[in-house]
Structure formats: structure tokens, C-alpha cells
Image (cartoon, rainbow, N blue to C red):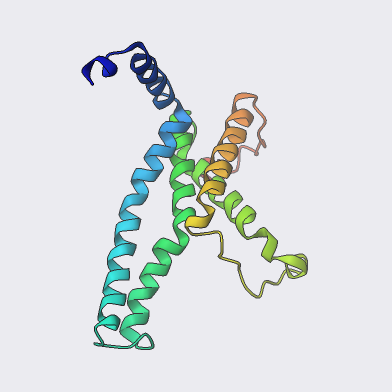
Length: 178
């Protein structure tokens, strides 16, 4: 086994892994996933606190205690992609030397438009919205969140590098112009 670990194949694989790990996009995805661990842990704890007592017969799924615990679970796990894309936009913008909050907000808004856009329909055109489709805001939308986060910050980076910006008059405060 020691001979295999020191073989040319393993050395080449190690070098390739180091190059991939040094990529700013991959590093940002890794940071966003690590940042999401706290949200996942909170959701898992509240899921356990909601389900175990129901299974033991201490209270029912209709009780207010269950609804309170399950509400926290819904805000964490069923919105996981939203929290993730915010962190990805922040970390990737920071890695590229851009304003992190601008990248995070842009990535989150673009993801919400992408993940829930099919649910707007005709109501969106009239300015009303009866409901928001949350199907892809949890773990099911995580791959789309990665793509949207990277593309959004990439476009933001390109606009900054090529000076494609909206110029505001000098009377506009700097925080508002940003």
C-alpha cells in the first residue's frame, strides 16, 4: 500500500487536487458549505426535538410545540439553498476583491428569481403574487444555487473589471451609489 501511495499516479492526483483546491470558485463553494453546517445542525436538532416526542406520544403533530419546532426546521433546511447562495456570493466576491455584500445580495436575488420564477406566471406581470413556490429553495436547489452564485458574481466581476457601471451624481451618498 505504501508503494501505491508514493506512486506517480498518486503524486499527479495530489497535484491536481491542490490546483483545484486553489481555485477561487472551488474555495468559495467549500467555504459556503462549511458556513452552512451551522444552519444544518440547528435544523437537525429542531427536527429531532419535533419528531421524537411525537413518536413517543408526548404530543401530537397538531400541537403548537410541534409546530414551533418544525417551523425552525422549515426556516433552516427548507431554505438551505437561499442561505448557501448568500454565503457563496459573499465568499466568491471577497475572493475576487469585490464588495462582498453586493455580491451576496445579487447572487441571492438572482437565485430567488431563478428558483421561484416559474411560479410567478401571469400574477407576476400584474404585480400580485398569491404564493411563492419554495420547492427548489431547500436542498433540491443546491446545484442551481452553486451555478447561479458563481455566474452572478462572475458577471459582477466582469462589469467591475471593464468599468461597466452606472454613474451616480456626486450628491448621492457613497453607500447609496454602491
